[in-house]
Image (cartoon, rainbow, N blue to C red; front, side, top):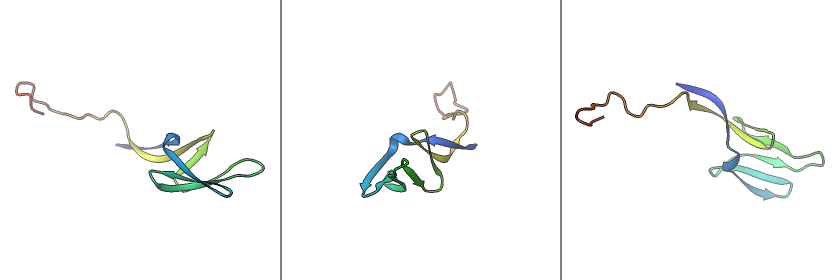
Length: 80
């Protein structure tokens, strides 16, 4: 089962500077840009991304609960 969650991706962000700000990327994919302004930075992010409290988040479907890797293992023979 999957849940739609807000995931902190701040540490995965890279940027390229340009004249008025920065272009933002995650895994070489552009996710938006930041423009410098007199009243502060303006974030213009693609759909599915948001900026809050100096962090950038991505809305993603993540698996809910713990995942079980092996089920119904045969304890006598050692096979799973």
